[in-house]
Length: 210
Image 1 (cartoon, rainbow, N blue to C red):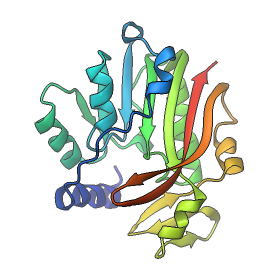
Image 2: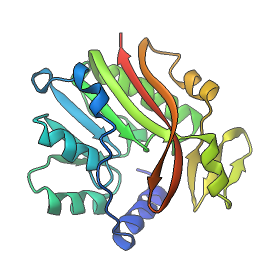
Image 3: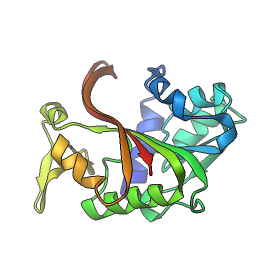
Image 4: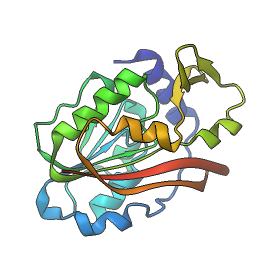
């Protein structure tokens, strides 16, 4: 388990108890989701905004995060929410073709290239045929607000900021990460939203496993 990252996120969720309402970004994917088709994993769930929204619609949801402090806070708000502490870089403990969807909202951009590719492959393995990967990741435009970010030596899209790694994507870079598996692209768009008092730039990606 990545101890420096775990310490960073535990501190974040302990000292910055922010609350953000769900922005309904998952609604467009409702046509492909069905409560009878199996479990949805919220991977890197943070305070569980996506998990809570999906569970309120009747889905079987498992909220997963590296930070036990985030999961503790989620447990106080939603005592019946199933949770699992994990580092996705260590591998996902889900059987082959066992999940109908994985949500990874601003949680896939903290890893080296090889780790990111391995995680995406692991998600693909765990999804049922027709299962969805729904994610949002930092856009290159987000670098403008990361003034202290320093690029790593061997990866121009990977930066160290606030003591942890953060990856930033343009469209070409993003497509490369999903080229090794068979996916149908449902959504690929660069967007911006108000988050934590400022405008945040990101890519939204919706993929269906073929």
